[in-house]
Amino acid sequence: MIAYKLLFVDPDMNALDAYRRLLKAMRPKWSASYAANGREAIQMMRKSKPDVLITELNMRIENDADLLKAVQKFYPEVIRIVLSSEPDTQAETILSATQSAHRFLAKPCKGENLLAHVEQAAELRKIIYSQELREIIGGMPYLPSLPQLYHELIHAMEAPLVSVADLGDIIARDVSMTTRVLHLVNSAFFGLPRQVSNPREAAVMLGMNVLKSLILYVKLFFAAPDSRLPGFSLDDLWEHSSLTARLSREIAKDLAGNSRIQEDAFLSGMLHDVGKLLLLEHPKYINSVIRRQSQDSDLSFADAEYQEFSVSHAEVGGYLLGLWGLPDPVVEAVACHHRPSQISGEPSPVLAATYLANALLCRQSGAELKLDENLLNQDEIKRMLATWDRQAAKLYEEHKNS
Image (cartoon, rainbow, N blue to C red; front, side, top):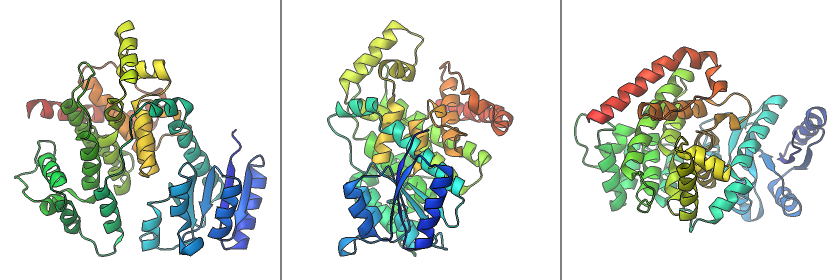
């Protein structure tokens, strides 16, 4: 078991004492520091950077700056977990914190649950910050920044009285984004009964989270260079991603029913192949994968990537979304959508839904894929797999005939 280094920040000294007892009893090989306020925490981080920060909400440092946002900016590789006594999960402080924290847990939180979250988040970071991945990322000319429009939407959504129509007005200020979003909204993918002519109407019809996923996809899709990969088509990638998003949301609904999980599954399905868009600007990588495939015609693109580099476009995409601060379930699903067993324990519903949606749709297109045995052994997935396979076939046929 890996020995992690933790930093706990809480103004309640009794809480800090409880954390000390927890680690001594359950993870004696881990090390930890304890701070009563944000200023102490930053001083400790400067001396010895932790693997994981576990903090109460609203911790402040110099000039009343927010601790979470400062750590996000200056120590982005540190895992940030909020463990808060804030009773209202819709409170503005929590909504703001979700933009800077990887995970949010409410007090009281069982010790084993807290430690499990620490280990799972650390495991994901290990995957998306591996040495192999760093070397591949280092060969790219640039990584795209998070769209300013997305920042504005997130900020607007933190306001207590914002409406979906207000978000449409934000999009309307960017002529290029408006054109592209309306083009996508009016495509056969959404199946709307009539043409939509303005972004406010589009926002109302689609909802906040679908709109956010479209903005991220438009940013990446339309910034992608012309492909030098034989047989690769940006149009095909868009269509596959669109179908995967739809099926992933349906699978997540059957697995969990929670609306937030369904939204995350849609977003991860839409973005699961963004790593391919990034790698189009890395010809050395692409050429190596093509050469490996030429030596074994039965290899899929992803399998050839793993054989050549030990990572794939999946981890590359997860890395970018992790840098952008997207929710951990989405980052995890994108990073592991070819190998869900990279994450120990039972995969999250978002990861399971994204993996299965992608795999079932790839099968519809003729790819020979063997499904992950660990997933297939889960009772709910065994029971529903045939249903999801029929849904994949229906979506694929609708797309072919559209």
